Length: 211
Image 1 (cartoon, rainbow, N blue to C red):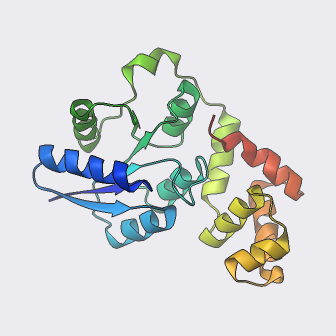
Image 2: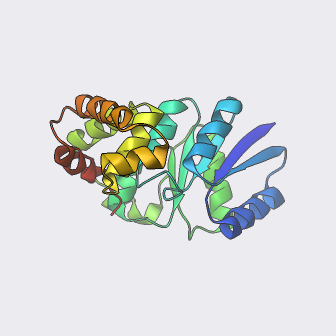
Image 3: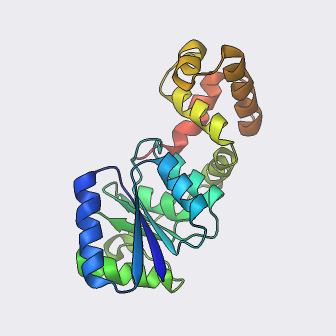
C-alpha cells in the first residue's frame, strides 16, 4: 500500500486535491496535515511514507524553512513541493535544497498524477516551461540552508519568531519558556549560523526567503 501525505493549510485545496487523487490512484492511503508541526508528527509516525506533497507557506513553514526541516527530519521520504510561488528562482532553490519535484498549483490533474508517478519511481521533475530558466543556486545559500536545517525544533521556533521581529520577552511568552531559555537558544543559533548578533542572523537567513 502506497502512503502519500498531503500537507496544505487550505482545507478547500487540500480536500480538492485529495478527491482528485483518490479518483485516479488505486491502492493509495492518504494522510493530511495543515502545518509544519503536523507534517513532522505524521512523518515520524509513518516512516513508511512514500511521498509528501508539501505546500511552502503553511503555518510554521516560513518560506523554505519548513521544507528544510522536513528534509532534515525525514531524509528518506521523497518530497514534492506544491506551491503558487513558481518563479524560476524559487523552483531552483527548492530543488537545490533536496525536493524531488516542484509542482505549480496551476498544474492539471493529469500532469499531477504523472509527476507523482515519476517521483514514486525515483525520478525528479520541474515544470518544462521553466526548465531552461532554472539557475544554479549559490553554494553559500545551500550552506546556509544546511545550517538552518540542523537547528533543533526549539531553536528553529525561536529563529522563526526572531525573523518576525519579536524580542526575547515576547518569544518567551509565545513559547511559554523563560527568557533565559530563549537567550540560550539564540546563543545556539548564533553558533550554528556562525554569526555574532541578532541582526546578522536576520541578514543571513534573509537569503532563504521566497521571492
